[in-house]
Image 1: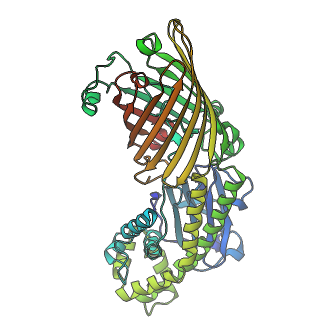
Image 2: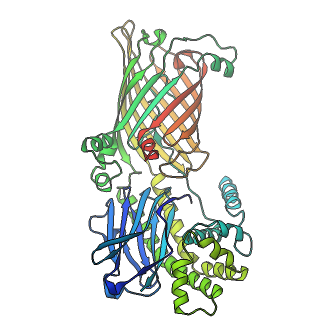
Image 3: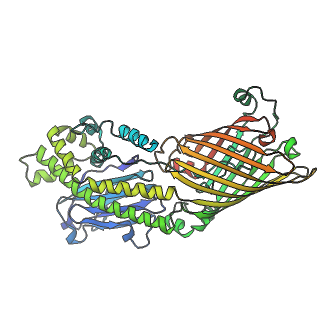
Length: 129
Length: 435
């Protein structure tokens, strides 16, 4: 296991989201190719998205939102993105906090490089304000 | 038996600190992220269950084709480098080093210059023309067959005795992969990737569930009387990269043991994921490859021209050892004597001595043993044996060190044994290192 993890914006471990004010999380995964393998999961709902769910997979960029839908909102939900490097050597994972007026801040941004059988994961807890 | 010894050695290395009843508190203090800390505990538990290990491909040819008399590669491999590589066989090692390794050999032609070849896949050229990254997923998916074809151009040394000129030859070559079992876009390999995705999803769902419980154990240990407000504050602050070391240091040995027991209860998903990834990697890495190639060394008007048509087969014996076989028809077009025709058979075993630390990082240290037999009209049979140690200098640049022995002088142009040094550069890998 030899994933090189380079934080650009370090993982805060926990993120406060004011859903009543229209805040939500926007996720971006940039991939080096050729076939990204990843899964985005919730401690409450299990797997929310995996790479083949996205139309056009395999792609160099995947984007999705969370907490826009009221049914997503769960206090102290742990969100995790799990990445495998079997057929994709490089990833950049970005999580932005958005409000009704646009992007408020970048919660975390991390780049990863790994060998074929490596896996890695990035998780954080969501605290609903 | 060797496999068992190897696995045992790996397990001993891997599990060096994993035999304790509770997690290593010193190790936990060094964790920079919560996920990294939990992963170290998962690794510790899995290590006890003896899982395999990784390797890295030894089938990619970055050296000059074997038809180049200065090449550091006696045996050609079925696939070229992924995208684009340069091989320079530049070091004039023939004199002193040859005498050192083979005392008593005769003097050789000191005027021989080095040789350099450049190899690119059709895929790399298309990506260049399209101004697209060669790792772009869509481009990669849409140009599977372009990865089957590669071209080589360069120069090769010429000697008066064998080539009737000292002017370097121009090397032209092409290689076509007929069977490409190691490409991701075969049905079998896509199935392996799909199985890997499924295993990763199972591990992801298991992991977030398990980590949420681990966080709860930590909260209840450190804040036994805490309410919802304290729990929210704890989750917002205790797991940041700044605060995590203090949070971990505050945990009691009993809490750590409780967390380890919790992880052991979820371990099957991670063991399954690791096995699936390893199996997928082995399947892709060890798959068969077969190619045909044509190489020509074209010299000036007085010089001889060498042509070689070749069938190349690669097979991964295990994740660290690749076996290659060459069978070729050779033709030498002589300007001042009868032409020479013949055949050649060569085989090699390439073994990785170390593991690579990244897909785009340095390649492993690689040891290769090769043998070649060459039979041509009007000549006695020529037999050559070679051992090569390829040492990665930095990501993308390897230094091959070669010792070659031949039963006849013509085979190596000089003495019946010599040492060679080269330099192989994988441009794509080098460029990635500077990103």
